[in-house]
Image 1 (tube, helix red, strand yellow):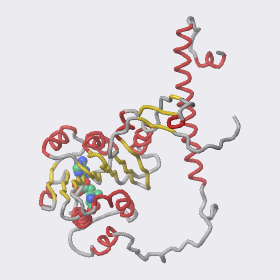
Image 2 (cartoon, rainbow, N blue to C red):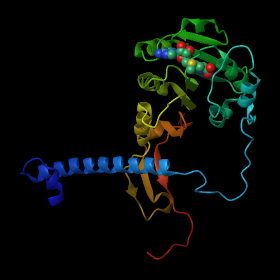
Image 3 (cartoon, rainbow, N blue to C red):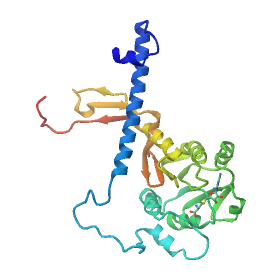
Image 4 (cartoon, protein in one colour):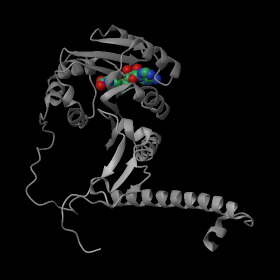
Length: 287
Ligand SMILES: C[S@@+](CC[C@H](N)C(=O)[O-])C[C@H]1O[C@@H](n2cnc3c(N)ncnc32)[C@H](O)[C@@H]1O
């Protein structure tokens, strides 16, 4: 009570007010603890020094400047020495393949926001195969000329534009936001399009630069939405010792992946009703 009183502006007059105040205080305390933990995690990452945590076994690296083709996207990128331009951070190619390989050769729908010179549309066509239906959005009407995709001219920060876009397009398997890269554009686009992902769909947002990037903060908040719980403990039932009903967000969203400059969000194949912990085995330490 003394602890709580420290945070209160005046005297606590009723038990109900005390309980309400305690709730506020504990929420504020938890928020402060979260902020401290986030700062500690960031400090730990910054203090990480090259070679200070060696791994066992030989690590073979390519010679500096030597390109190594590790997947079909790398191969496409390396082979694009003339023609329509494409500009990519090199490490994105591995990330794309990790999350999108399941769509290769399958019928699928892809939307790319930010077409520029058209080379990335060529890359998606080549990678996904002829069964993929490509859609593109760019603010620059120049991009209307690219016939590999159905191209819409519009501003990704304009929610009314997305309403029109949604009316004319099917649900999407893959969304790649490589547009204007401002926090507002990235946020509006995510909020307008994440619900348009098909089950099993993948949302990629590129070029999130800087450890103080506002959209990164938004994504951290979004991923917190995966961690909520409302636990039921049932020790007599080893099949479901602990369970928690899935929140609407947990039910729809499988995972949020963070890479240098890129965030990938995967939608669940099948909605999740609850999260369950089971106990398997017969030998346990004494209670
Ligand atoms: C980085 S380039 C895209 C690069 C291309 N995807 C590639 O891989 O080569 C960014 C594109 O986003 C477009 N863009 C910028 N602001 C936009 C906005 N508000 N809405 C839609 N597109 C935008 C630009 O016109 C430009 O073509």
